[in-house]
Image 1 (cartoon, rainbow, N blue to C red):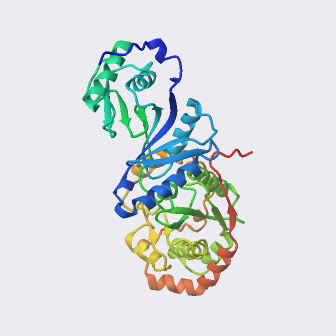
Image 2 (cartoon, helix red, strand yellow):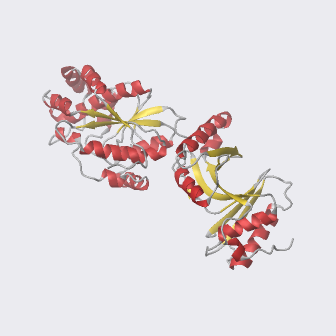
Image 3 (cartoon, rainbow, N blue to C red):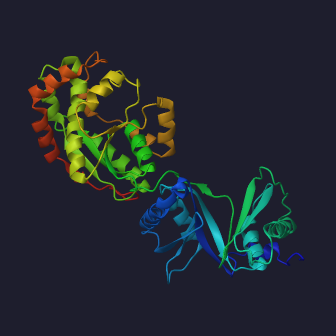
Length: 413
């Protein structure tokens, strides 16, 4: 077949007249779920629709391990809207790659026009990778690669490099249409939020707990958040900080809920109970008891903390075992084997590090002893619990929670 007479001016004049901008979503481990795969994909479809509902109504269609996001009926597809969809979809858990693509007719001329449009203005070596699922298409994958590649070379003079190119232009030939796209944006990976149930994150204002929340959302958990404030003996700064953190994390699941417990008076009781070096561990046991009650009311099946083994003196194996003794729900510690540098790197990537580093008065500092206990004995802690009447105190704290609904992208005064 001879090369098509398509000029660079035609390619860069805007959207090809016979093309529709859309979004292609590449799935990861979801495709390995065997008989349960359809359930995972349906959840992911719904999560994508919910994530972009304030941008545009969309149609999300499944095909061969890929999802196609198109504008809903009666909605105009334009490049700016598709770019906004790509940015939002990138944060949806369960997705490996997100591509802005052209959906074109099933003829070589339409493929070439879309390819030239996508490659306009680029520099560096490129390669074309075609995949022909519909064998009725008049060109084989190799023939299509050669045709599209030669047209790009003629129009823009770009060099071809099949190994490690700077740009990869992909062509996927389906039964009813062809998709043409270039390098995409890496997604979050993991599983769709909601597939693994619900859990409650004990959210401090620090660096660790937001990263722990993100890692468990990535494993398919829908999470709620519980923050313990030192009020009435501290200001509201820690609440503002927790709110800002949850608002940033909300982009990964939507519909996030933050529950705040005024914890200052309970801390006074712990301090006067004679806990001494065990005060911090006793406090955390009370927090976990309260968290268990709140989690059960919300339908949560686990608690999530940002503990990292040995990171601080209270996070020893003996102390973690003593904390597990306080509750029946499992305590998930996704950061347990990570060091501080790794955690900070992840916090930076999910954009919570800057918020976590803002100053505030953490409620934990109110009980910090000069020397923390590193080998807490469970029997000693149970005695402190009895002196505090910890079960009844946890009930009162759980009844005092205040609910907030931080929404990603909201504007605050």
